[in-house]
Image 1 (cartoon, rainbow, N blue to C red):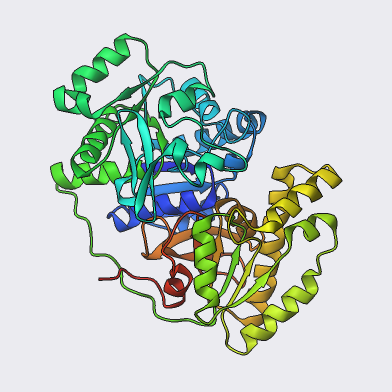
Image 2 (tube, helix red, strand yellow):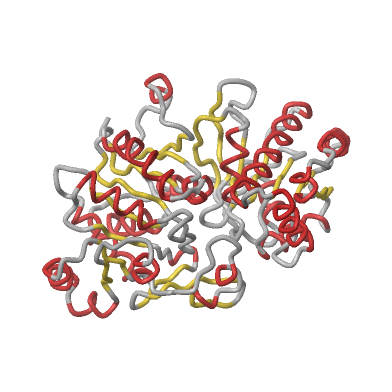
Length: 448
């Protein structure tokens, strides 16, 4: 098998967003939840890109060094032109949690690239890098990352630095730099040669609009022309940029976007996100026909949560034809977050272990309710939650079906069992319009 792209996602929603960018950009792709066996690969003839989803974003450097080399080697064996370690477009990472610097070191050790392109920005998603600084849009505003209302106070990976190279420099001793908008204007190739003479191993790439994104894509595609896969790091902005370059220079054809899949109600959504974006979506759902039910995360950690009763209430609503949303918090100010912190202190459980327990509990509810109610479409909100929940369902692969906003498409699941063909949306906590759950209920598809 020879591919244009192979990618390894450090969370499930981001890995799925990469598949979406490729598929809708004219490069057929599939996302696997574990390394596929030959029989699973044979179910997807004609693909030009393949990804693996993981929960690396919640893991420490020791876990990454134990697991990433094998995964990278497996992807490299498929002979991709570009091997992409996919990270969040808001750079979620820290030296001890989801260290992008550790992934960079592993990639350099395995593949010894001349340089590693690092493209976090994705202008289609209102993620911008200018002169090495990362910005992200929220609502009507765009914030520098260290002043972002969510990321600046993220409970696990708070962003105190907007300079991408500086942020990653706290996670690795490898020499890092940036290729900036000014470099693009004066001559990217000369700037790249100068950086390599200075010994830089990885360079972050600016992208704020179509022209600068295309130039970033050119630099990546040009660097991938060798015999070995090019190791690169970034958001799905890597794929957006390369596709934009190919469409402009090589005659690559971007097909029309698929339309809506139509309503398939009732639907079930589960959310483990604490983002204010998700909070607004929960409020919209409550006001627009969804039955909203709360899973108390503190009670879950303390062992006092009645999951059977919660499941019975949800099933009764679904069997009456009503859409259901089960959530753990409504935004970062939800009092349940403080209660969860107290429960963790009382039990001595780590935050990562608690996140896994919450995600797996939501996943078990999703499995049992989907099967009992015969559901055709479900939603999981929260990148970490998606990883833990989908593994409960026996799903081994995903394909993109219908777009919504970039990065949160409606997908089709491949599974050994009753969930084969299930339509599923995996939404990062900060992703989606206010009416996102309703948009998925109606089957996705672009809006005019």
